[in-house]
Image 1 (cartoon, rainbow, N blue to C red):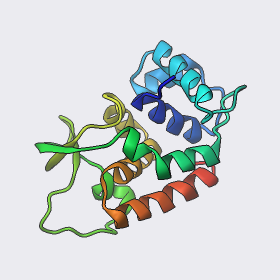
Image 2 (image 1 turned 30 degrees about the vertical axis):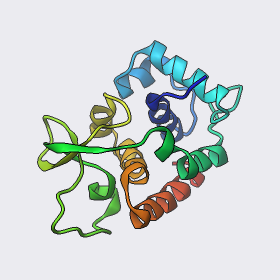
Image 3 (image 1 turned 180 degrees about the vertical axis):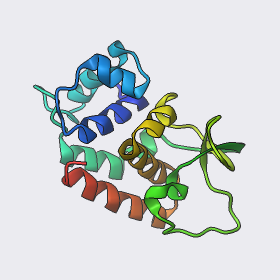
Image 4 (image 1 turned 135 degrees about the horizontal axis):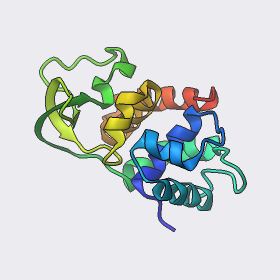
Length: 171
């Protein structure tokens, strides 16, 4: 079993939905995945002990540990050429201007609806940026996770603190 990047997106959605038994088809539609991809992701998450073996209860401590110690190694993010897109990582609204880097353009997910220009960062999953545009809480989670994957020590620390608090508080 090997986790795939979309599994992290599904895990965030499970937290947002407060672990309700959201039908696979609806979750898939909201995330821009197929129902079979969503079902397979939950299977891998159970096997990886990030979701309880029965039901869809997120193992919160395991998820916090994975974010803190593993995600940047398993799914590293890299900036590429400039693009127009949606701000992510420390440039996203969830950071509320906590980090001012006036000389550096903000990292973005390349997207046709984007209004900001900066270095492009591939989202965890190809449809994640579209799903984030429809769900502010998912956008917050994914941008914070990008800060952990991409950021320097201060951005990583800030993002981890926000993620840990959010995971503890039911999303």
